Length: 82
Image (cartoon, rainbow, N blue to C red; front, side):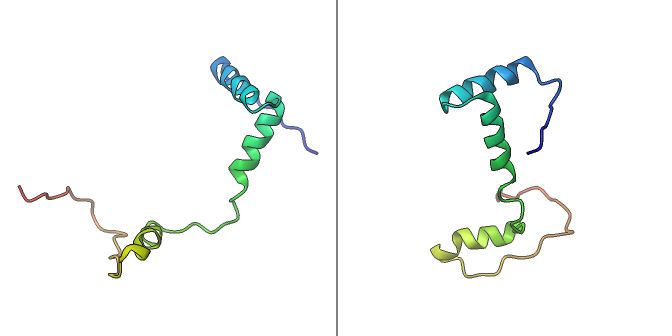
């Protein structure tokens, strides 16, 4: 096992972490371990681009059109017809 020392944590963060640990019925140390485990557990999964995520979410509801590629285009304000 590796030991990790984190210095200069704000008092408010420590207090909230202590409360969170108590609400889960574990020590602050175990709570931090669990937070770190959760933070890195999906780290090996490939990052899905926004367009692919939108298509996956709305595809079952009838999205059949291809979404245009917007990479490299200049940002412009929305036009609501007024």
